Length: 69
Length: 405
Ligand code: HEM
Ligand code: SF4
View 1 (cartoon, rainbow over the protein chains, first blue to last red):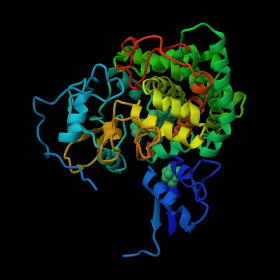
View 2 (spheres, rainbow over the protein chains, first blue to last red; view 1 turned 45 degrees about the horizontal axis):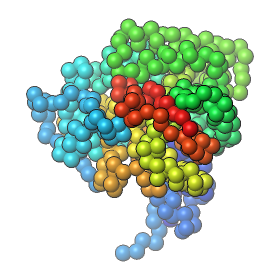
View 3 (cartoon, chains in turn green, blue; view 1 turned 90 degrees about the vertical axis):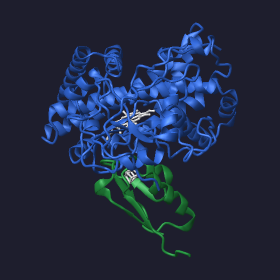
View 4 (tube, rainbow over the protein chains, first blue to last red; view 1 turned 30 degrees about the vertical axis):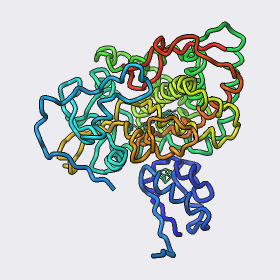
Protein backbone atom coordinates (compact mmCIF):
# COMPACT_ATOMS: atom_id res chain seq x y z
CA UNK A 1 0.00 0.00 0.00
CA UNK A 2 1.22 3.49 -0.87
CA UNK A 3 -0.07 6.54 1.03
CA UNK A 4 -0.39 10.08 -0.36
CA UNK A 5 -1.37 13.23 1.57
CA UNK A 6 -1.99 16.84 0.51
CA UNK A 7 -0.55 19.13 3.17
CA UNK A 8 -1.92 22.24 1.46
CA UNK A 9 -5.51 21.24 2.11
CA UNK A 10 -5.04 19.52 5.49
CA UNK A 11 -7.04 21.16 8.31
CA UNK A 12 -5.03 19.68 11.19
CA UNK A 13 -7.94 17.73 12.67
CA UNK A 14 -5.64 15.00 13.99
CA UNK A 15 -8.04 12.22 12.93
CA UNK A 16 -5.26 10.44 11.02
CA UNK A 17 -2.87 10.50 14.00
CA UNK A 18 -5.56 8.96 16.21
CA UNK A 19 -6.21 6.25 13.61
CA UNK A 20 -2.63 5.32 12.68
CA UNK A 21 0.03 7.04 14.83
CA UNK A 22 2.76 4.90 13.25
CA UNK A 23 2.00 6.37 9.84
CA UNK A 24 0.85 9.95 10.46
CA UNK A 25 2.19 12.77 12.60
CA UNK A 26 1.53 16.53 12.80
CA UNK A 27 3.96 19.41 12.20
CA UNK A 28 5.01 21.13 15.40
CA UNK A 29 4.37 24.65 14.11
CA UNK A 30 0.83 24.24 12.77
CA UNK A 31 -0.47 20.70 13.29
CA UNK A 32 -0.47 19.94 9.55
CA UNK A 33 -0.13 16.27 8.59
CA UNK A 34 3.30 14.68 8.16
CA UNK A 35 3.67 11.27 6.59
CA UNK A 36 6.05 9.09 8.62
CA UNK A 37 6.15 6.37 5.98
CA UNK A 38 4.82 6.26 2.43
CA UNK A 39 4.61 2.48 2.40
CA UNK A 40 3.26 1.25 5.73
CA UNK A 41 3.47 -2.46 6.58
CA UNK A 42 0.48 -4.66 5.89
CA UNK A 43 -0.64 -4.92 9.53
CA UNK A 44 -1.33 -1.16 9.57
CA UNK A 45 -3.37 -1.19 6.37
CA UNK A 46 -6.76 -1.15 8.13
CA UNK A 47 -5.72 1.75 10.35
CA UNK A 48 -4.62 3.70 7.30
CA UNK A 49 -7.90 2.96 5.54
CA UNK A 50 -9.73 4.25 8.61
CA UNK A 51 -7.67 7.46 8.49
CA UNK A 52 -8.59 7.87 4.82
CA UNK A 53 -12.29 7.44 5.59
CA UNK A 54 -12.24 9.81 8.58
CA UNK A 55 -10.10 12.62 7.17
CA UNK A 56 -12.55 15.56 7.10
CA UNK A 57 -10.62 17.40 4.39
CA UNK A 58 -10.38 14.23 2.26
CA UNK A 59 -6.66 14.66 1.66
CA UNK A 60 -5.40 11.12 2.33
CA UNK A 61 -5.34 8.60 -0.50
CA UNK A 62 -4.04 5.06 -0.70
CA UNK A 63 -2.91 3.15 -3.73
CA UNK A 64 -3.40 -0.54 -3.14
CA UNK A 65 -0.45 -2.18 -4.86
CA UNK A 66 -1.26 -5.85 -5.03
CA UNK A 67 -4.91 -5.77 -5.85
CA UNK A 68 -6.50 -9.17 -6.08
CA UNK A 69 -9.49 -9.76 -8.28
CA UNK B 1 -22.82 5.68 -2.33
CA UNK B 2 -25.77 8.01 -1.99
CA UNK B 3 -26.32 10.97 -4.19
CA UNK B 4 -28.44 13.86 -3.15
CA UNK B 5 -31.66 14.12 -5.01
CA UNK B 6 -34.86 15.91 -4.24
CA UNK B 7 -37.61 17.46 -6.34
CA UNK B 8 -35.86 20.17 -8.36
CA UNK B 9 -36.65 23.76 -7.48
CA UNK B 10 -40.15 23.14 -6.18
CA UNK B 11 -41.73 26.09 -4.49
CA UNK B 12 -42.03 25.30 -0.79
CA UNK B 13 -45.46 23.97 0.03
CA UNK B 14 -47.61 25.12 2.91
CA UNK B 15 -46.77 21.96 4.84
CA UNK B 16 -43.11 22.88 5.25
CA UNK B 17 -42.62 22.45 8.98
CA UNK B 18 -40.96 24.84 11.34
CA UNK B 19 -37.35 24.20 12.32
CA UNK B 20 -36.06 23.31 14.83
CA UNK B 21 -38.64 20.76 15.89
CA UNK B 22 -39.34 19.75 19.51
CA UNK B 23 -38.00 16.53 21.01
CA UNK B 24 -40.58 14.03 22.31
CA UNK B 25 -41.51 14.36 25.98
CA UNK B 26 -39.78 11.70 28.02
CA UNK B 27 -37.06 11.16 25.37
CA UNK B 28 -34.51 13.86 26.15
CA UNK B 29 -31.65 11.95 24.53
CA UNK B 30 -33.34 11.33 21.19
CA UNK B 31 -33.68 13.75 18.27
CA UNK B 32 -37.16 15.08 17.47
CA UNK B 33 -39.56 12.46 16.02
CA UNK B 34 -40.15 14.69 12.99
CA UNK B 35 -36.48 14.36 12.05
CA UNK B 36 -36.58 10.55 12.13
CA UNK B 37 -39.55 10.74 9.79
CA UNK B 38 -37.71 13.00 7.38
CA UNK B 39 -34.64 10.80 7.49
CA UNK B 40 -36.75 7.79 6.49
CA UNK B 41 -39.09 9.46 3.99
CA UNK B 42 -37.73 12.81 2.80
CA UNK B 43 -34.01 12.87 3.57
CA UNK B 44 -33.47 16.16 1.77
CA UNK B 45 -36.47 18.44 2.18
CA UNK B 46 -37.34 22.00 3.06
CA UNK B 47 -37.97 23.48 6.49
CA UNK B 48 -39.11 26.91 7.64
CA UNK B 49 -36.81 28.96 9.88
CA UNK B 50 -37.56 31.73 12.41
CA UNK B 51 -37.29 34.40 9.68
CA UNK B 52 -39.64 32.64 7.26
CA UNK B 53 -36.87 31.41 4.97
CA UNK B 54 -37.15 27.83 3.71
CA UNK B 55 -33.73 26.17 3.31
CA UNK B 56 -33.12 22.52 2.48
CA UNK B 57 -32.46 20.17 5.37
CA UNK B 58 -30.33 17.04 4.91
CA UNK B 59 -30.80 14.30 7.51
CA UNK B 60 -28.81 11.29 6.30
CA UNK B 61 -25.29 10.53 7.41
CA UNK B 62 -23.81 9.98 3.97
CA UNK B 63 -25.56 13.02 2.44
CA UNK B 64 -24.30 15.12 5.29
CA UNK B 65 -20.68 14.07 4.78
CA UNK B 66 -20.95 14.52 1.04
CA UNK B 67 -22.42 18.01 1.37
CA UNK B 68 -20.05 19.24 4.06
CA UNK B 69 -17.02 18.13 2.04
CA UNK B 70 -18.30 19.74 -1.17
CA UNK B 71 -16.21 22.78 -2.21
CA UNK B 72 -19.29 24.41 -3.77
CA UNK B 73 -20.72 24.89 -0.32
CA UNK B 74 -20.08 28.04 1.71
CA UNK B 75 -19.97 28.80 5.45
CA UNK B 76 -19.87 32.55 4.83
CA UNK B 77 -22.45 34.03 7.20
CA UNK B 78 -22.57 37.32 5.29
CA UNK B 79 -24.15 35.70 2.23
CA UNK B 80 -27.79 36.71 1.75
CA UNK B 81 -29.33 33.24 2.07
CA UNK B 82 -27.23 32.02 5.00
CA UNK B 83 -29.59 30.12 7.37
CA UNK B 84 -29.03 31.91 10.67
CA UNK B 85 -30.27 30.29 13.88
CA UNK B 86 -32.13 33.29 15.23
CA UNK B 87 -31.90 37.09 15.43
CA UNK B 88 -29.29 36.96 18.22
CA UNK B 89 -26.98 34.44 16.52
CA UNK B 90 -27.35 36.42 13.26
CA UNK B 91 -26.22 39.59 14.98
CA UNK B 92 -23.23 37.87 16.54
CA UNK B 93 -22.13 36.36 13.22
CA UNK B 94 -22.39 39.80 11.64
CA UNK B 95 -20.32 41.53 14.29
CA UNK B 96 -17.80 38.78 14.90
CA UNK B 97 -17.52 36.19 12.17
CA UNK B 98 -14.29 34.37 12.97
CA UNK B 99 -13.12 31.58 10.67
CA UNK B 100 -16.01 29.24 11.53
CA UNK B 101 -18.15 31.51 9.33
CA UNK B 102 -15.65 32.08 6.50
CA UNK B 103 -14.55 30.17 3.43
CA UNK B 104 -11.10 29.22 2.22
CA UNK B 105 -8.61 30.73 1.66
CA UNK B 106 -9.47 33.16 4.51
CA UNK B 107 -10.70 30.32 6.71
CA UNK B 108 -7.55 28.24 6.20
CA UNK B 109 -5.25 31.19 6.85
CA UNK B 110 -6.90 32.02 10.17
CA UNK B 111 -7.52 28.45 11.32
CA UNK B 112 -3.86 27.56 10.79
CA UNK B 113 -2.82 30.26 13.22
CA UNK B 114 -4.55 28.36 16.02
CA UNK B 115 -4.01 24.72 15.05
CA UNK B 116 -0.63 24.06 16.73
CA UNK B 117 -2.09 24.20 20.25
CA UNK B 118 -4.73 21.60 19.34
CA UNK B 119 -2.48 18.93 17.83
CA UNK B 120 -2.80 15.44 19.29
CA UNK B 121 0.64 15.73 20.89
CA UNK B 122 -0.04 19.09 22.53
CA UNK B 123 -3.37 18.01 23.91
CA UNK B 124 -1.95 14.69 25.18
CA UNK B 125 0.67 16.74 27.03
CA UNK B 126 -2.20 18.52 28.82
CA UNK B 127 -3.67 15.25 30.11
CA UNK B 128 -1.88 15.36 33.52
CA UNK B 129 -3.02 18.98 34.04
CA UNK B 130 -6.59 18.00 33.16
CA UNK B 131 -6.39 15.02 35.54
CA UNK B 132 -5.24 17.33 38.35
CA UNK B 133 -8.07 19.78 37.70
CA UNK B 134 -10.63 16.94 37.67
CA UNK B 135 -9.30 15.39 40.89
CA UNK B 136 -9.19 18.75 42.65
CA UNK B 137 -12.80 19.56 41.78
CA UNK B 138 -13.93 16.09 42.92
CA UNK B 139 -12.11 16.57 46.25
CA UNK B 140 -13.97 19.84 46.74
CA UNK B 141 -17.33 18.28 45.86
CA UNK B 142 -16.78 15.35 48.22
CA UNK B 143 -15.93 17.72 51.05
CA UNK B 144 -19.04 19.84 50.44
CA UNK B 145 -22.79 19.42 50.98
CA UNK B 146 -25.07 17.02 49.10
CA UNK B 147 -26.84 17.22 46.74
CA UNK B 148 -24.70 19.44 44.56
CA UNK B 149 -25.28 20.85 41.06
CA UNK B 150 -22.79 18.97 38.89
CA UNK B 151 -22.91 21.66 36.19
CA UNK B 152 -21.68 24.50 38.42
CA UNK B 153 -19.43 22.43 40.68
CA UNK B 154 -17.73 20.36 38.01
CA UNK B 155 -18.93 20.19 34.40
CA UNK B 156 -18.40 23.88 33.64
CA UNK B 157 -15.21 24.51 35.68
CA UNK B 158 -13.29 21.60 34.07
CA UNK B 159 -13.28 22.88 30.47
CA UNK B 160 -13.27 26.48 31.59
CA UNK B 161 -10.07 26.05 33.63
CA UNK B 162 -8.46 24.15 30.75
CA UNK B 163 -9.31 26.66 28.02
CA UNK B 164 -8.26 29.59 30.24
CA UNK B 165 -4.89 27.97 30.77
CA UNK B 166 -4.50 27.19 27.08
CA UNK B 167 -5.51 30.65 25.89
CA UNK B 168 -3.89 32.57 28.73
CA UNK B 169 -7.12 34.16 30.05
CA UNK B 170 -7.49 34.65 33.82
CA UNK B 171 -9.99 32.12 35.22
CA UNK B 172 -11.02 34.76 37.77
CA UNK B 173 -13.00 36.39 34.92
CA UNK B 174 -15.11 33.29 34.32
CA UNK B 175 -18.40 34.76 35.57
CA UNK B 176 -18.04 37.55 33.04
CA UNK B 177 -17.33 35.45 29.96
CA UNK B 178 -19.60 32.56 30.92
CA UNK B 179 -22.63 34.82 31.31
CA UNK B 180 -21.93 36.57 28.00
CA UNK B 181 -21.41 33.35 26.08
CA UNK B 182 -24.57 31.91 27.61
CA UNK B 183 -26.44 34.85 26.06
CA UNK B 184 -24.82 34.24 22.70
CA UNK B 185 -25.59 30.56 22.45
CA UNK B 186 -29.27 30.96 23.23
CA UNK B 187 -31.58 30.76 20.25
CA UNK B 188 -34.03 33.29 21.71
CA UNK B 189 -31.51 36.04 22.42
CA UNK B 190 -32.57 39.31 20.81
CA UNK B 191 -30.41 41.35 18.43
CA UNK B 192 -29.76 44.00 21.05
CA UNK B 193 -28.73 41.49 23.71
CA UNK B 194 -26.46 39.72 21.25
CA UNK B 195 -24.89 42.95 20.05
CA UNK B 196 -24.07 44.04 23.60
CA UNK B 197 -22.71 40.63 24.67
CA UNK B 198 -20.58 40.33 21.50
CA UNK B 199 -19.17 43.82 22.02
CA UNK B 200 -18.29 43.09 25.65
CA UNK B 201 -16.47 39.90 24.69
CA UNK B 202 -14.63 41.52 21.77
CA UNK B 203 -13.50 44.39 24.01
CA UNK B 204 -12.39 41.91 26.65
CA UNK B 205 -10.37 39.82 24.20
CA UNK B 206 -8.95 42.86 22.49
CA UNK B 207 -7.76 44.06 25.89
CA UNK B 208 -6.22 40.68 26.65
CA UNK B 209 -4.43 40.67 23.26
CA UNK B 210 -3.10 44.11 24.20
CA UNK B 211 -1.75 42.70 27.49
CA UNK B 212 -0.11 39.83 25.63
CA UNK B 213 1.55 42.27 23.22
CA UNK B 214 3.08 44.03 26.21
CA UNK B 215 3.79 40.90 28.28
CA UNK B 216 3.98 37.80 26.08
CA UNK B 217 3.56 34.46 27.87
CA UNK B 218 3.51 30.83 26.80
CA UNK B 219 -0.12 30.65 25.67
CA UNK B 220 -2.26 30.75 22.54
CA UNK B 221 -3.33 34.40 22.81
CA UNK B 222 0.35 35.39 23.04
CA UNK B 223 0.97 33.41 19.84
CA UNK B 224 -1.84 35.36 18.16
CA UNK B 225 -0.48 38.64 19.57
CA UNK B 226 2.90 37.78 18.06
CA UNK B 227 1.20 37.39 14.65
CA UNK B 228 -0.41 40.79 15.13
CA UNK B 229 3.00 42.29 15.85
CA UNK B 230 4.40 40.60 12.72
CA UNK B 231 1.60 42.12 10.65
CA UNK B 232 0.16 38.74 9.65
CA UNK B 233 -3.08 39.15 11.57
CA UNK B 234 -5.20 42.19 12.36
CA UNK B 235 -6.03 42.94 15.98
CA UNK B 236 -9.71 42.49 15.16
CA UNK B 237 -9.10 39.05 13.63
CA UNK B 238 -7.10 38.04 16.70
CA UNK B 239 -9.92 39.08 19.05
CA UNK B 240 -12.53 37.25 16.92
CA UNK B 241 -10.43 34.08 16.97
CA UNK B 242 -9.91 34.34 20.73
CA UNK B 243 -13.62 34.81 21.30
CA UNK B 244 -14.54 31.81 19.14
CA UNK B 245 -12.11 29.60 21.06
CA UNK B 246 -13.18 30.88 24.47
CA UNK B 247 -16.87 30.20 23.82
CA UNK B 248 -16.38 26.91 21.96
CA UNK B 249 -13.87 25.75 24.55
CA UNK B 250 -16.19 25.53 27.51
CA UNK B 251 -19.82 25.54 26.43
CA UNK B 252 -19.46 22.30 24.51
CA UNK B 253 -17.37 20.04 26.71
CA UNK B 254 -19.34 21.12 29.80
CA UNK B 255 -22.43 19.59 28.24
CA UNK B 256 -20.61 16.41 27.23
CA UNK B 257 -19.73 16.01 30.91
CA UNK B 258 -23.12 16.80 32.45
CA UNK B 259 -25.41 15.30 29.81
CA UNK B 260 -23.03 12.35 29.40
CA UNK B 261 -23.20 11.63 33.13
CA UNK B 262 -26.98 11.82 33.05
CA UNK B 263 -27.15 9.43 30.08
CA UNK B 264 -24.85 6.97 31.84
CA UNK B 265 -26.92 7.16 35.04
CA UNK B 266 -29.91 6.19 32.91
CA UNK B 267 -27.93 3.20 31.55
CA UNK B 268 -26.54 1.62 34.75
CA UNK B 269 -25.12 -1.43 32.95
CA UNK B 270 -22.98 0.78 30.71
CA UNK B 271 -21.93 2.94 33.64
CA UNK B 272 -20.85 -0.13 35.63
CA UNK B 273 -18.86 -1.42 32.67
CA UNK B 274 -17.07 1.90 32.34
CA UNK B 275 -16.40 2.21 36.07
CA UNK B 276 -15.06 -1.30 36.48
CA UNK B 277 -13.04 -1.77 33.31
CA UNK B 278 -10.20 0.75 33.66
CA UNK B 279 -9.34 0.03 30.02
CA UNK B 280 -8.36 3.30 28.29
CA UNK B 281 -9.62 1.90 25.00
CA UNK B 282 -13.10 1.34 26.38
CA UNK B 283 -13.04 4.85 27.84
CA UNK B 284 -12.07 6.29 24.44
CA UNK B 285 -14.77 4.29 22.72
CA UNK B 286 -17.34 5.43 25.32
CA UNK B 287 -16.47 9.04 24.54
CA UNK B 288 -16.95 8.48 20.79
CA UNK B 289 -20.28 6.73 21.44
CA UNK B 290 -21.52 9.50 23.72
CA UNK B 291 -20.42 12.13 21.19
CA UNK B 292 -22.56 10.30 18.64
CA UNK B 293 -25.48 9.49 20.93
CA UNK B 294 -25.77 12.94 22.53
CA UNK B 295 -24.81 15.05 19.48
CA UNK B 296 -24.90 18.14 21.66
CA UNK B 297 -24.34 20.58 18.80
CA UNK B 298 -27.88 19.73 17.79
CA UNK B 299 -29.06 22.60 15.65
CA UNK B 300 -27.55 21.58 12.33
CA UNK B 301 -24.59 22.74 10.26
CA UNK B 302 -25.49 25.79 8.19
CA UNK B 303 -24.31 26.30 4.62
CA UNK B 304 -25.09 28.16 1.40
CA UNK B 305 -24.80 26.42 -1.95
CA UNK B 306 -22.70 28.54 -4.33
CA UNK B 307 -23.94 26.58 -7.31
CA UNK B 308 -26.86 24.24 -7.76
CA UNK B 309 -25.93 20.97 -6.16
CA UNK B 310 -28.31 18.35 -7.49
CA UNK B 311 -30.96 19.42 -5.01
CA UNK B 312 -31.54 22.73 -6.81
CA UNK B 313 -31.90 24.90 -3.70
CA UNK B 314 -29.75 27.70 -2.45
CA UNK B 315 -29.42 27.18 1.25
CA UNK B 316 -28.70 23.96 3.00
CA UNK B 317 -28.66 22.78 6.55
CA UNK B 318 -27.30 19.39 7.43
CA UNK B 319 -28.80 18.08 10.62
CA UNK B 320 -26.77 15.97 12.94
CA UNK B 321 -29.45 13.30 13.10
CA UNK B 322 -27.02 11.67 10.65
CA UNK B 323 -25.55 10.24 13.86
CA UNK B 324 -28.73 8.16 14.25
CA UNK B 325 -28.77 6.88 10.68
CA UNK B 326 -29.38 3.10 10.77
CA UNK B 327 -27.45 2.71 7.50
CA UNK B 328 -24.26 3.71 9.28
CA UNK B 329 -24.90 2.89 12.94
CA UNK B 330 -26.79 -0.37 13.52
CA UNK B 331 -29.53 0.00 16.15
CA UNK B 332 -28.72 3.72 16.29
CA UNK B 333 -30.91 4.66 19.27
CA UNK B 334 -29.12 2.27 21.59
CA UNK B 335 -26.29 3.61 23.72
CA UNK B 336 -23.51 1.04 23.46
CA UNK B 337 -20.15 2.20 24.76
CA UNK B 338 -18.43 -0.82 23.21
CA UNK B 339 -19.43 -0.07 19.60
CA UNK B 340 -17.12 1.57 17.09
CA UNK B 341 -18.61 5.04 16.64
CA UNK B 342 -15.47 6.89 15.54
CA UNK B 343 -17.02 7.83 12.20
CA UNK B 344 -19.77 9.96 13.85
CA UNK B 345 -20.33 13.51 12.64
CA UNK B 346 -20.66 15.11 16.10
CA UNK B 347 -17.68 17.31 15.17
CA UNK B 348 -19.06 18.04 11.71
CA UNK B 349 -17.19 17.14 8.50
CA UNK B 350 -15.25 18.95 5.82
CA UNK B 351 -12.75 21.76 6.37
CA UNK B 352 -14.69 23.19 9.32
CA UNK B 353 -14.57 19.98 11.34
CA UNK B 354 -14.04 20.88 14.99
CA UNK B 355 -10.62 22.34 15.69
CA UNK B 356 -10.87 21.54 19.38
CA UNK B 357 -11.70 17.85 18.91
CA UNK B 358 -8.54 16.44 20.51
CA UNK B 359 -9.36 18.45 23.62
CA UNK B 360 -13.04 17.56 23.37
CA UNK B 361 -11.95 13.90 23.48
CA UNK B 362 -9.31 14.01 26.21
CA UNK B 363 -11.39 16.07 28.67
CA UNK B 364 -14.34 13.66 28.78
CA UNK B 365 -11.93 10.70 28.72
CA UNK B 366 -10.33 11.96 31.92
CA UNK B 367 -13.73 12.74 33.44
CA UNK B 368 -15.43 9.46 32.53
CA UNK B 369 -12.47 7.42 33.80
CA UNK B 370 -12.27 9.33 37.11
CA UNK B 371 -15.64 10.66 38.28
CA UNK B 372 -17.58 7.38 38.48
CA UNK B 373 -14.65 5.52 39.98
CA UNK B 374 -14.10 8.11 42.68
CA UNK B 375 -17.82 8.50 43.44
CA UNK B 376 -19.12 4.96 42.83
CA UNK B 377 -22.51 5.65 44.42
CA UNK B 378 -23.17 8.73 42.26
CA UNK B 379 -26.93 9.11 41.73
CA UNK B 380 -29.77 11.46 40.89
CA UNK B 381 -31.81 12.73 43.84
CA UNK B 382 -34.68 13.76 41.50
CA UNK B 383 -36.70 12.29 38.63
CA UNK B 384 -35.67 12.81 35.04
CA UNK B 385 -38.70 15.14 34.61
CA UNK B 386 -37.21 17.47 37.21
CA UNK B 387 -34.13 18.21 35.11
CA UNK B 388 -34.04 21.38 32.98
CA UNK B 389 -32.82 20.47 29.49
CA UNK B 390 -31.29 23.09 27.21
CA UNK B 391 -33.88 22.85 24.43
CA UNK B 392 -33.44 26.53 23.62
CA UNK B 393 -29.64 26.54 23.45
CA UNK B 394 -27.52 26.05 20.34
CA UNK B 395 -25.54 23.50 22.33
CA UNK B 396 -27.80 20.91 23.95
CA UNK B 397 -27.37 19.69 27.49
CA UNK B 398 -28.75 20.42 30.95
CA UNK B 399 -28.86 23.73 32.80
CA UNK B 400 -28.56 21.97 36.13
CA UNK B 401 -27.83 18.44 37.24
CA UNK B 402 -28.37 17.74 40.93
CA UNK B 403 -26.35 14.74 42.08
CA UNK B 404 -25.77 13.00 45.35
CA UNK B 405 -23.85 9.95 46.56
C1 HEM C 1 -17.74 17.94 22.80
C2 HEM C 1 -17.33 19.02 22.44
C3 HEM C 1 -17.44 19.67 21.09
C4 HEM C 1 -18.31 19.42 20.06
C5 HEM C 1 -19.44 18.41 20.01
C6 HEM C 1 -17.95 20.34 18.99
C7 HEM C 1 -18.59 20.39 17.77
C8 HEM C 1 -18.20 21.18 16.71
C9 HEM C 1 -18.82 21.17 15.40
C10 HEM C 1 -20.01 20.31 14.99
C11 HEM C 1 -18.14 22.05 14.61
C12 HEM C 1 -18.40 22.34 13.12
C13 HEM C 1 -19.10 23.61 12.84
C14 HEM C 1 -19.47 23.75 11.36
O1 HEM C 1 -19.22 22.86 10.56
O2 HEM C 1 -20.06 24.77 11.00
C15 HEM C 1 -17.11 22.64 15.44
C16 HEM C 1 -16.22 23.62 15.01
C17 HEM C 1 -15.30 24.23 15.84
N1 HEM C 1 -15.01 23.89 17.16
FE1 HEM C 1 -15.88 22.43 18.26
N2 HEM C 1 -16.89 21.10 19.40
C18 HEM C 1 -16.55 20.72 20.66
C19 HEM C 1 -15.53 21.23 21.44
C20 HEM C 1 -14.67 22.23 21.06
C21 HEM C 1 -13.57 22.73 21.85
C22 HEM C 1 -13.16 22.21 23.22
C23 HEM C 1 -13.00 23.71 21.11
C24 HEM C 1 -11.78 24.51 21.46
C25 HEM C 1 -11.44 25.39 22.01
C26 HEM C 1 -13.72 23.83 19.86
C27 HEM C 1 -13.43 24.74 18.85
C28 HEM C 1 -14.01 24.74 17.60
C29 HEM C 1 -13.65 25.66 16.54
C30 HEM C 1 -12.59 26.73 16.61
C31 HEM C 1 -14.46 25.34 15.43
C32 HEM C 1 -14.45 26.02 14.06
C33 HEM C 1 -13.59 25.26 13.11
C34 HEM C 1 -13.59 25.81 11.70
O3 HEM C 1 -14.52 26.51 11.30
O4 HEM C 1 -12.61 25.55 10.98
N3 HEM C 1 -14.73 22.91 19.87
N4 HEM C 1 -17.16 22.08 16.70
S1 SF4 D 1 -7.11 13.63 9.13
FE1 SF4 D 1 -6.82 14.83 7.25
S2 SF4 D 1 -7.22 16.94 7.82
FE2 SF4 D 1 -6.93 15.80 9.72
S3 SF4 D 1 -4.76 16.07 10.21
FE3 SF4 D 1 -4.93 14.17 9.06
S4 SF4 D 1 -4.63 14.76 6.92
FE4 SF4 D 1 -5.02 16.64 8.05
